[in-house]
Length: 413
Ligand code: NIG
Ligand code: FE
Image (cartoon, rainbow, N blue to C red; front, side, top):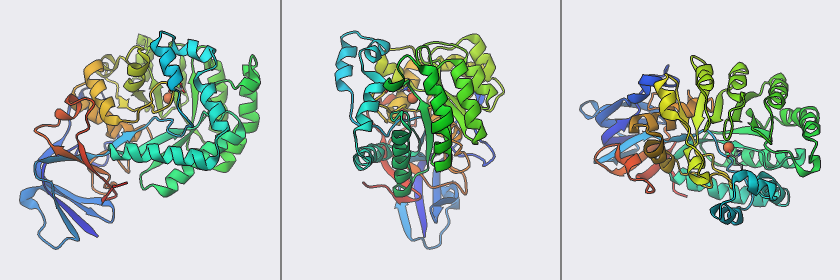
């Protein structure tokens, strides 16, 4: 099965296979080939170049994409896409002026979603989640990470992990699962957070590890949720089972979680709306990817991650949606890219790098997706006819994604 895409107006994000992420100045460059061809063989990118060198032999399929651009599909490295129900009533409370914390104190927030999820059957949870997954794939997402954290009991956390496994089995894109048992203190442990942390480490984690359903471990490290000390205990325990951290830090307060994440060799530290100079310094020359979630800042009306400052300081940056019912009920990477340019002052090149190659790295998928590289999965976006790739973030709220190819096959759900 050999498929040829020809007359590509511009092929974006063309990279050598040993570039695993880009940081600082290098984020300003988006390597492209104008007037290009691309060949897919058995689901992988097997060749590409300028049209003058386009191979002439017979192909199973030839797709003429004249006037359109092609790029690797979006890599969304931080989502909570498996959840039950929605929280639009809290949305109204928020409009009336209540803060995220006040809504949580009123019985809303993560515990509200946990209650709904516990009462939802595994099949119903799968149905809701698959609808969301198909929707984000149609918008161009071709690799995704999904967290647990709305179960908060061993049984319900495993239910979430099994739903993620079913999504992995039934959809052709790479999916990574992250265990976020430390998302909130469940009501059964009200006023006994340490009891929950102990229970998580002693009873939940061994079973989660045993199930082999989680790729990473996460903690919501935040005032009124889990302290830096709690996180250290949990990450230490996770390490015994070979679970690498990808953590929620600095969403509302900078309390030292970034440095601890780096010390634990976290694959990524995510949110970072509140960053001190020391937090920025602690990420320098490390293998930990900072991840910004502008959809969350937009929805909650909290500060945006100081991405400009971070990239100017030489750091890499990935962008993700944080798709969840409480702080970012959207999995639209096109909107995230626009918001990163408009609100965080990233250039289109920086935003596209952050949403592809760096997002792939933040999921440990950099050898499979995120760039146009021979041997990587042919998970590709074909844009509508556009003049320049700057039009992608410019036309906010409107997707320029015309077609999505997963392993070279058009995705048409
Ligand atoms: O990443 N901050 C923690 N977790 C989610 C929100 C969860 C929720 O409100 O349901 C986030 O923003
Ligand atoms: Fe999140």
